Image: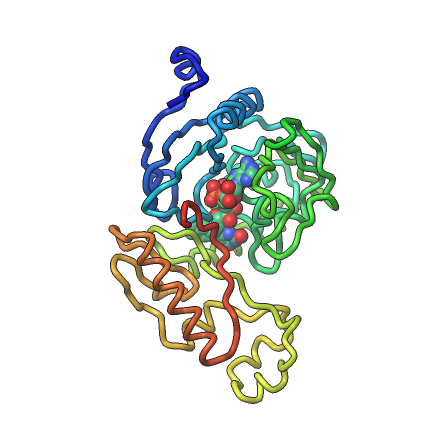
Amino acid sequence: MAALWPLHLFMTLNIQKNILLAPYTTFKIGGPAKYFCEAKSIGEIREFCNWAKEQKIPVLVLGGGSNVLISDKGFDGLVIKIHNSNLKFEENKIIADAGVNLSKIVLESVNRNLSGLEWAIGIPGTIGGAVNGNAGAFGRATSEAVEEVKAFDILEHSVKNFKKEDCKFGYRKSIFKRNPDLIILSATFRFKKGSSGDIQKAIKDFTRQRIESNPSGFSAGCFFVNPGWEGLRNKEELIREFPELKQFADRPKISAGFLIESVGLKGKKIGGAMIAQEHANFIVNMGKAASKDVLALADLCRKKVKKKYGLELEVEKRLLGFD
Ligand SMILES: Cc1cc2nc3c(=O)[nH]c(=O)nc-3n(C[C@H](O)[C@H](O)[C@H](O)COP(=O)(O)OP(=O)(O)OC[C@H]3O[C@@H](n4cnc5c(N)ncnc54)[C@H](O)[C@@H]3O)c2cc1C
């Protein structure tokens, strides 16, 4: 245990041992964290990271746990659940702590007739997770509204500001995703003034589309990113051979869900996991799925899509605690 730390300090820090991670994820899958804590401030994040450094154990940051698949073996280190929750409003900006739910920012902006994140209504998870993975839907992305991000650098033990261009955002990508030593503390979002009627209508439309396409049950959203046409030398050839892909010819990406459905995997079950009937890019935990069940289904999707179309499916979820 905390060899260099007297017991009373370990207890003041409120670090718990052997905490099951499944309840902290929307998949409801995942074994125990060797150590687990919830951080409500930058001060606490610093102290927890300090402690982990002295123990020489790795740190894993968790937001809403809605974009992760955690191994049944769990995580042999310290899991820090980010729970800071301050919000500040400045004219057309909202400055939100990383632990604030994305849906809260959407609602706060809508209430102020601020437009820019309506499309994100219904995406679970926190600001930290949304910025880390540049969450997006309906052709839109979190990065569009981000002005600045504040992060704690575990290695340098310092707080850094990242202007939007420093965040290196891409399709479901950011500098924070590439560098797990950066813990997002807060983000500043800039909105446009909009009309209440237009904003309310957009919220209604996006909510309806989400309800229609998102399966119920435990999942982590779309399992794979949609493969892009860019970099494919044989686009025309592929469309000629598979005319069903023509519908994506004018879009930058091909729907991964469509590809998985096309290889006949909708409804396929392995152990307690299933490829959703409503949307083939969702793998759902039917109640007692193990992480290996989900990975086996994902592997089947990858192999079948590769065999038929020659396309590579890339996993969007963060796979944590796997060797
Ligand atoms: C039903 C459903 C629908 C979904 N729909 C969408 C969708 O339309 N579009 C979409 O993009 N996603 C979607 N998702 C996936 C997920 O909700 C989003 O990606 C979300 O933004 C993840 O946020 P989170 O807080 O849950 O992140 P987590 O799952 O907790 O973490 C994801 C990654 O970010 C890291 N991370 C989290 N917080 C921080 C932080 N403060 N600092 C540094 N790193 C951090 C974690 O270490 C992990 O690697 C959906 C999920 C579900 C269950």
